[in-house]
Image (cartoon, rainbow over all chains, first blue to last red; front, side, top):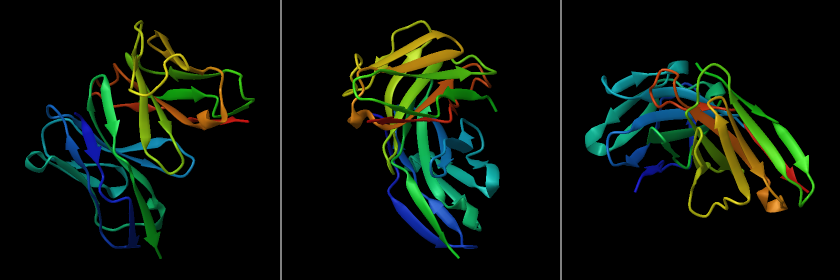
Length: 111
Length: 117
């Protein structure tokens, strides 16, 4: 069965520190992979996506993610976190007619 | 990117009434529309998937007679919460997938916060 796991419910980092949010998935074939960010009370904004090709993808706001087929992972990274990055982050995995979300990781940024 | 417009953004209704939420894809054809429900501080729970012109496919545990989904055209899908009860209060989000870039990417509506009194 398809599933998406974000093992970290809540992460706190200091402003300027690096960040890595984990995402693992179980899917029948290589799916489309996405990271979305959601600010409180808001909709979702796409940070980046992977469909094929280069396994390291660049997104908006300085985020990047690396697809590792052997580990079924698609971890999100940012070298230096800004206070405005505090939000909920969702990993999503799917294909045509199917899209599943992880439970989300809430990011808190300390001054 | 493509735009999905979702209305209303907020709605308050009395218990027992029905509420309709609309999602329109403004600049692409949404061949598939996903409807999600999000509880406070929780992830998005897929409720149903609908393809234009077909009956929606509901996830296990979602009452199809309570959450009526219509996807009559490539640019419009609606979710009607029938005989709403306070436990139906939630944040409902639609997402369209379709002709834009043909990459399977979802384009999300802004969400609708339903409060049932």
